[in-house]
Length: 345
Ligand SMILES: NC(=O)c1ccc[n+]([C@@H]2O[C@H](COP(=O)([O-])OP(=O)(O)OC[C@H]3O[C@@H](n4cnc5c(N)ncnc54)[C@H](O)[C@@H]3O)[C@@H](O)[C@H]2O)c1
Image (cartoon, rainbow, N blue to C red; front, side, top):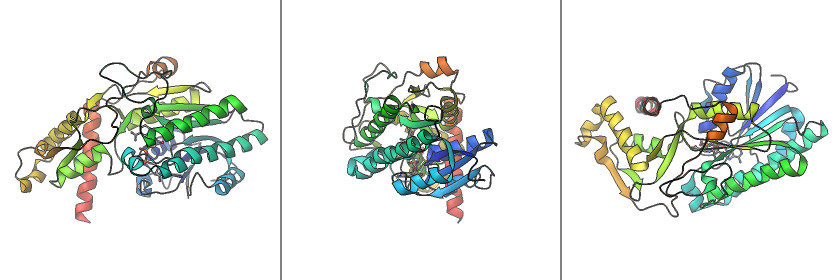
């Protein structure tokens, strides 16, 4: 890659969604140069990019989006045509334990990127042409009761330190659009599922605990509802929003698959019963469902998220393509295969 070719800067690309996005994008746009910068926190894993690593339009650099001198040097060295900011501390439970890193990466890191992009693009006279796309979450809107959905105009009401940091970052992103005329856009998606998610998250935990015969922990009464979006569908949505979304707008991206946590766990256990019944033999259980155990609830646990995503559907023509059952099956197969590989190492 020639450093002065126009380059799209992706941050946090060694994580779950970022790595799936880079895989998708490098194939979809072979003539676009991608620079992935990632701090490689506990959540970042270069193995997630092993299929992408050798592609001629891809390059990786390790570093922190909050490191001002380093981020400035990236904009000096590369001709950054746009930024898609995935980098974040992303686990709600960790934010409840200690929120410092969430402010540093999610808020100050985003601000550092915005500042560097603004300075460089202003000098080039292209502040309103080059785009800053912030990857956000439906969690910024707060929690719903049994009915209703969040639209893009729902006021933010974050209820845990993770969502507070993501909401704060969004305010900074919007402020750079209003104050300086920078071309900014925000997408807020519901819960993603698919390959390469960190072990600590709900679906990988359900699968690994089941295969190892450990109790499958589900918070509270298991009735908390999340809307699930297959990660490939999210990647297509980000592509559309980055290329065609209107400046200063936010777009909700949903999967149309609301599930309680306990139903999600039961469905995954049924898939495991069907596809890998042999691994439950040592544990004397008739179904992996027998391992589900309700535990003390997460503090301030949001009850239900649901997004109204008619805007992206109507304005940009996006819709999810992956059927929920098919997506869940593909996801389960991927984690089972990774788990088997680890057993043979
Ligand atoms: N996973 C979801 O269901 C979901 C849903 C909606 C929105 N999001 C958002 O999407 C983005 C990606 O989420 P994910 O699930 O892939 O997260 P993840 O935790 O799997 O990956 C985050 C990546 O960011 C990197 N990172 C963290 N801090 C950094 C820093 N200061 N500098 C550089 N790199 C840093 C990590 O090393 C990791 O590779 C996040 O912004 C998250 O808020 C996630």
